[in-house]
Length: 116
Image 1 (cartoon, rainbow, N blue to C red):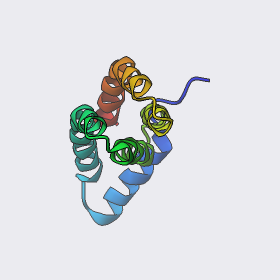
Image 2 (spheres, rainbow, N blue to C red):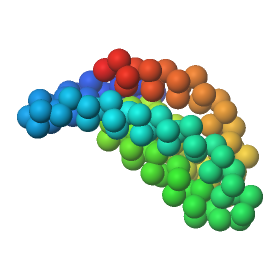
Image 3 (tube, helix red, strand yellow):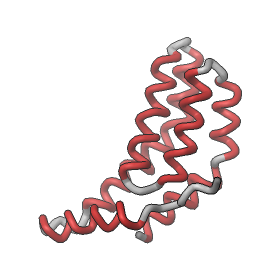
Image 4 (tube, one colour):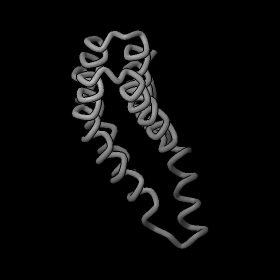
């Protein structure tokens, strides 16, 4: 099954809130914060694993999964869900492999959100 890259309906809901509140920077602000969090994730994840803090590694992936899905980046949310599942199972090598293999998806998803 191929996941939807961007759920346009969710993006439109954020745009509706922007229009209703007069704030035209909500989506762009959320996307900028997401981009920052995604950029910080590999180092934070690796640090958590190195310290033996499995819960922090799982929590970091879980948080990004939810944030991505709330912003409509469904495929990216699925990627972080897979990383979370691998980390929960204690398979940090698989989690890192999924992250590495997802680099193109991450870039495409963030770019699509910026254009949305």
